[in-house]
Length: 172
Length: 188
Image (tube, rainbow over all chains, first blue to last red):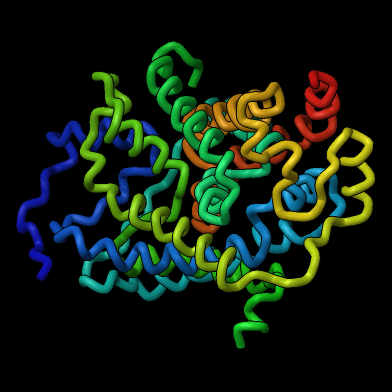
């Protein structure tokens, strides 16, 4: 069983939180201490997600080329519908103050603007058009048997590492 | 049923399922959908090298690694057990444009003449895998997220910085497709 930690570390004294909030993807923490096997439910959602990626051909280099050449509506349809469904869901969660299955309030953090979103976004866009993959499809392509994409993934990990190494010297 | 599932799925079905991932992860445990963070967690777990950006408790984010592990498994399942017998389709205009650039294989989701295992140690491999992959990893972290974290999670939560990031990476993609790729295809 999960146990609720009575006194979660406060934001002011928890430097780990600050390090993680350097990019806002890691701050939305559950304060529950869970045994590892509770993560299996995320793996199950991941399986459905991976099947969707393959069956809707989102992992295809050609679908991404069609998108960037305005020659198919497919990817615009996928992303557009996903955003609308996600936005309606979040509005419902906020409106009715829905809690997680463990009874925790759902926390949504606002992102703050920095110039990295423009520079980094452009660089990622270049990579997306070259490889036909954003990070999700990168993993799924390998699972689908395109094994050479393992090289792309290793290089993406290297790119992330180099960013971490030089980030203090980059304009943000 | 299996036959029905094996056809390529309509964009609306995929859109609904991917969109529902956002509330599902929130309801399961306050998790925000965002995949590129996993690249950072892998760095933090394997090569932190005393870099502040990688000094955090990545184990708290293990859920995301389970999620992406599941996605790989889902891809294995879909590619092996839900295989569509019909030939792969590419829009005629795209096929024409890509043939003009020099792409030859249109038989599968990835062109084998660019992403085949035999291309790893060639100049094509260097461009399409090593260079492209590096840009994905560097760019997503510099931008603070990818298609899932910014375009889907961020826009769903009406975040202006995510809109700016989404516009930036779409712009990057257009620039690379229309101006960069014709140059890159001249290198081999």
